[in-house]
Amino acid sequence: MATAAVVATAIAVPQAEGSTSTADSSLPAAQHAEQKAGGKPAPDARDVVLAVHGGAGTALDPATTSPELEKAYRDGLSEALRAGQKVLNRGGNSTDAVQAAVERLEDNPLFNAGKGAVFNADAEHELDASIMRGSDLKAGAVAGVRNVRNPIQAARLVMDKSNHVMLAGEGADDFAAQHGLKTVTQDYYFTQARWDALMKAKAAEAGDTNAAKSKALPADEQSKGTVGAVAIDRKKDLAAATSTGGLTNKLPGRVGDSPIIGAGTYAKNGVVAASATGAGEVFIRGAATSTISNLIEFGKMNVPQAAHQVIVKRLPQLGGTGGVIALGPDGTFDAPHSSPGMLHGYLTKDGTLVTRIFPDESPANS
Ligand code: ASP
Image (cartoon, rainbow, N blue to C red):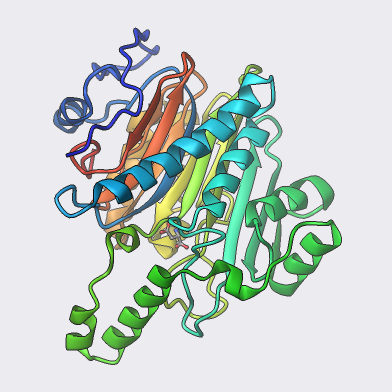
């Protein structure tokens, strides 16, 4: 059975202004989760400088997840946090930190972004990503790219080197290649688990329920595996980034919430940095991350209240579940999800690193 904290150090953290929380990130994960579930909305942790998620979806079952797979997930999240931490520790900015964290997750075949992206209905890969800087609300995004090795780098290029916010399809691939980004052929993204998931989806679509049942998804496929990161740097600049292969068996050309600023990704200094994961169509219709920001800025909610309001209260009414990682300017962090599970982790300013992959570490609807 898992222990949630990679490094379980007790830390003393001040209560953020305006918060009614009694949550304490020094508690063991299960106890912490129980406390959160009982008294929502309460923050997951305080004094957080960087957080990542590895997607919402079906919860990983501690009883059937092998120790090797558990370790692979925790290592994947930890490596991404370490990559972002390196940037912040050398005085780098939060935009570079979230990009570095997401690049690591894109390179990890366990997650549905970059290598390991899901297949669409034509058995091909189309990837989406976005990044946003809270200091000036600059943002960049790509949708439906097919040959960029790291879509988050292409999103960053759109932000830095074009007058646009989003490029899609061939134009986005060409733009990335012209600016020297590494390109790959479609087979680079292949993983057996994602192929099996497509076959299962096709079988279910064809009404062949026996075939669908006989091909049970491996545990690493249960989470949808979109990735994201949020960070705050020394200058108190917030940033957020998200990257995904989308949904298995999606229609070719379908774009989800991940590359859409205000749906999958949003960052505004003094307010919040947020990266979402879940049923993309609902997150677009509910303007998920910008609504969280607006509830904080104009609705006078704190980060946990706003994130909970959108993810647990509003989006399920539109017919979709998922989760968000949300980081406030004072380091208040929350990761509510209405899906059974959401892989995530965070790093506090004293260097404590926590990963949460099982439901007892992070219960749904909390
Ligand atoms: N939100 C992503 C999409 O709809 C999928 C996910 O987060 O699992 O493309």
